[in-house]
Image (tube, rainbow, N blue to C red; front, side, top):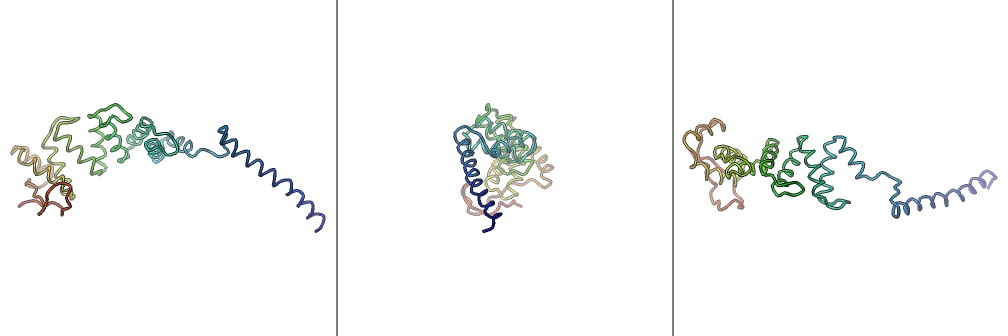
Length: 214
């Protein structure tokens, strides 16, 4: 071993323990005093969300909604869902509507919930469309409107929603001739009662898509 190699070896003998001690201090400091050697990923996500990044807002909502590495905070979750919903995120619009219906993290507000169900429905969220149609039929959060409810349930039935087919069939006979004519305009076809698939028992059964009677 030459002189230069001996010197390098002596340097590493001192350096390695020092590095190990510093690394150990970093972990101890983090555990006991909250001193962090690396950025907190949640805080990084928060800054991105506060900057308007949609995906970060959705993740922050989920973090607080389900308690990922933080205590569950439904109010904080609702705040982030609202921000994401206002940016047009269909899933967040639906979840915010659900929270407004339950009063979870936000004051209960059926009228506002109806509006968010509709907006999510415009994003092709089928469950949101169904719930908005249900509220139209029953007059919850909005004025009762059987025509609009029938049209929406009929559109869902066309997409294969058997439960919507049941609701559309039940509404058909309640429409006036004028409403049926208007529904025809909305649906761009002759309005006919929706026929249930053979063997259909209830909305929970598995059945082929609904057909329309001739």
